[in-house]
Amino acid sequence: MNTAIGDILPFAVAIAISPIPIIATILMLMSPRPRPLSLGFLAGWLLGIAVAVVAFTLLAGVIPEREEGASQPILGVVQLLIGLALLLLAVKQWRSRPKAGETAELPKWMAAIDTMKPVAALALGFALAAVNPKNLLMAVAAGASIGHTALGAGANAVVIIVFVVLAALSVALPVVAYLVAPGRASHALDAIRAWLTENNAAIMAVVLVLLGAQLLGKGIGSF
Image (cartoon, rainbow, N blue to C red; front, top):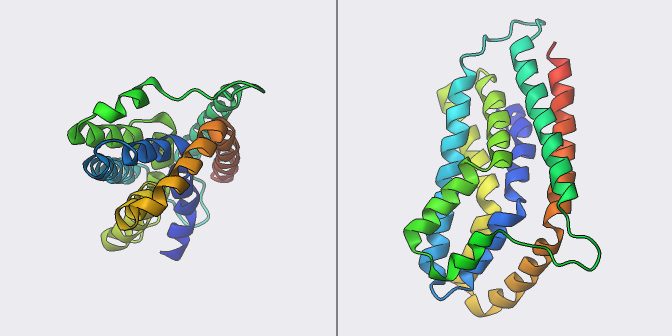
């Protein structure tokens, strides 16, 4: 099980350090209704990650199990395709970074956060976790890895829980910090939001390149 957790750790971290959901969480914490919006968003984020990774873990069972010393061409193709997709996303992210002197642009839906309802925040969290292409690719990669560990349902459930918790930490921590000490958290969260806004594209480009290269290597090794 430790090996399985080690395999899915990079994908969980890649989801966790996604700047956009962190920025959205901080904006909700600075809105007129910080508690219901941030808690709704966190619930949707957790649910979206869980649904995506469970779905792809179950789908991974369709791929024939590997015999000792045998190749896994189907899994290798899946890993190669995901790796290439991540590299393409990395190029797109890098090209979208703001030029010198430009201000980084955030998604237009963030302007509506102040008027958002808790149910809409929950739906947004779910969509960003389960439908966002980058996170979806992370869930595919993690699910394929978990589904082929042959650990059994109980151990797989533990690995999935670890994955979901780690992937959700970056959204959960600001919410918890604000609920515990709102006065102290506000200034720090605003500074984090500003830094992430300016460096969003560069951060994700580097992460996607590293993960894409890792998956390409695993894919080649599966043949």
